[in-house]
Length: 375
Image (cartoon, rainbow, N blue to C red):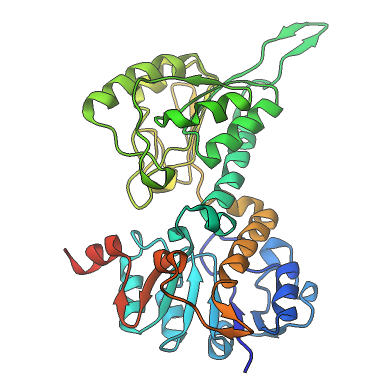
């Protein structure tokens, strides 16, 4: 029997992405897989059912779960969706286990095999499966466009009959994938850009994009390319340096986050109050608590003339390309799991081992297991 891949419609509010696109569906079919998609699953990404040739389109999610060996999703399955799954079924999505511990527990108890795309190890051979990077690139690009839309001034320098308009000063905090994309986009729009990251290794990348790197005599790079949490003394140094640069900036874009934890607080109300009226902060860490003290997820707050924007699920705003990138990440992961047209995952493979959340009635991801079951 061929492996059947199922794609239900995303039911999370505001989610416009889909876990498959026509080009990827075609490749699955050529490999001998059967693909079942819920009718309308791609509508929010402007992919009507008619775009998916040679695959089965069913009316509701229940039919998808009944027929599929493997479920592909963007958002984690709800408790109702988990109830539709059968024991041993495999579901792959961005699981957000630190946020939805009860769902992880339910998948464990129902003997569901779950793979969390955000847990894919950040190693060389897994780069093509790295959804954190692909979706962060979308977010960084979009953050600058949102900032330009909210800003009260031009980004580029303009020479006009009425005089010369000076370019906007943009500060990007965090030089990961989203930060680097934000830097590149702001530079394309003609802004003067500065960037800061606690990882000194990012200096060369920042400067290669034409931005000035703000140097703090601290290197906080941790395993996997993430930043470790700063000590109190380091935080004090960081705060003093950033405060002056934030005050001089017309736009600040913050991207600093620690997977599975509350976002580090980098900007307090005093710093915001030093900014010029008409300035803008776009906080990409809004969903995990925000890098700015004044950030409210899903809202734009005005404080003494400064706009603090806290967007949620930014990649979903560019659903066409975000879906395309995510679907290709999934496709590359599935290459590890399907051999000669059969589902034969090697659970000892370091990529599958690292991304496995639940299997055989157990929670395999240690931090999540500690969260759900205690130390």
